[in-house]
Image 1 (tube, rainbow, N blue to C red):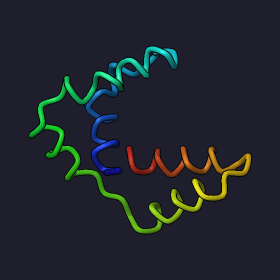
Image 2 (image 1 turned 90 degrees about the vertical axis):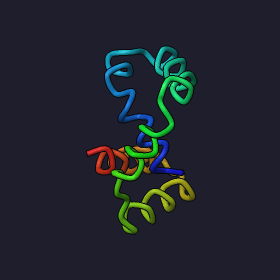
Image 3 (image 1 turned 135 degrees about the vertical axis):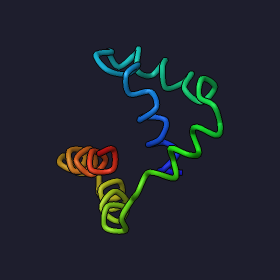
Length: 81
């Protein structure tokens, strides 16, 4: 599931750049219907998520203190490359 979400972000990267949050949400809401299914799954197969990153993301979500959001985005940026 995480790989599909990251693939959608990668495939819509140019559409998301320099947008405000409301516009990003609109783009992401429309993203699944604007991407060819085969292309999406091919891109998702290329997304590599290490066990360490996955554990870190889960830990940050469970222990949502003030700094965990920053660690979450830092971990996500490693996945996005």
